[in-house]
Image 1: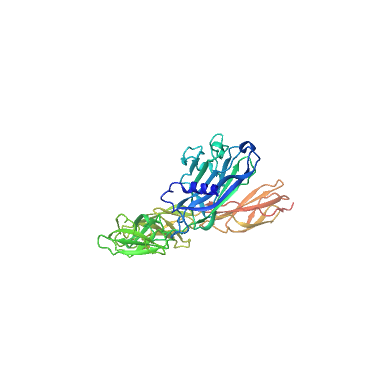
Image 2: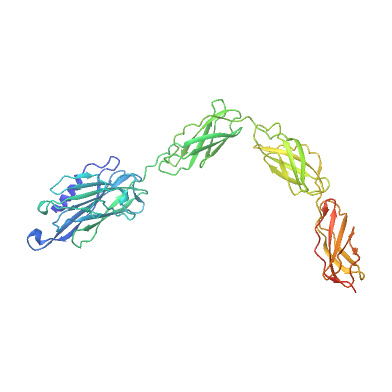
Length: 504
């Protein structure tokens, strides 16, 4: 009993904890190891006695109102251990700190170590890095080790004169709850090397925290605003650093005018918020406040002044529209922007090219002049026009450009070529016209018949199918192919016909 009283008295005799902590040390379990004493020490037969006593607590009070600490505040897990028996050699302590779910080490604070020398001695705080190392000596699974040479990673508990009035170590380990705790266990395991086979001491203390107090949120930060139209503005911001302990469920943006414009507010779930109904051509500044289930917080600082533009309209029509042919299927349309942009920046243009003689009409969007058209129909006439758009809408089309003609291209090649012997020295070749004439009429066809076994190759021209090829070599095998010609040039040859034989 005297040992217990002495140890508890040593703990309660400590100085006050930091002012940010709670009211008192909240006590947990006290345990002891048992050792077999040494004949050389007691001058007699060995006997069993307490070896080391240990005590765990944390700085807080579950009986206070409100309970302390509050969730999110730093507190201290305290482990106190002292030599209470007569050991054959100096024992060493090897602590481990085990935290429940929702509790974490607060590594923004330092670990504190206290030592009471034997004697009896007076407890003092240890600041030597090797004897009281910081977080780099706490492993991922909570084991805490010293760096002092000769201590084997632990902390020694030397005895006093005549092996009485043993020494003590105390550790304050900063922790904080990330969620409310209601009786979960903070645990300190204490392994001991003392020449005996004593088990690890498992000490625990029930941990209680109050929920964080819920208040109205703080003010949003980094508020900025700019006009998005003559009657609207976009207000952006960062959430407040402090949500008051409850989720923010909305924001209110307010825009006020020192020049007589109408004050308007708008709500939203986050940044940005669009405020509408403002007065055109006025100066405005905006602020924001946040709301949770407790209420609305204070207004943020106001933004710098900005001006809403004058009332806007759709832009006028572009001018000086000119269509320039680039290739058989491509033309480029140039133009000047409209003289009136409607007091709103032009965001794009739409060009339309139509054909009065059967070409495929095309529409292309662009952001500036020129706009290029592709996939126009070769050989067809085109004229083009352009309109402009801004944030308000789309303006009217310009006048049409002068008409241009897309040049024709060479036709596709003929198909379905068939060749048969007409006489001993001639062949009749039939074929289908090309599927596409290149935008210009086919003016002629050229037929070529070639021999695979020594006959003379001959060609013949015609304007339609069939075409007869003469002066071939009698008795030879032939096959024939065809190409078409228009004003732009000749197509590629068709595939060869099937092979046929002229009579001998």
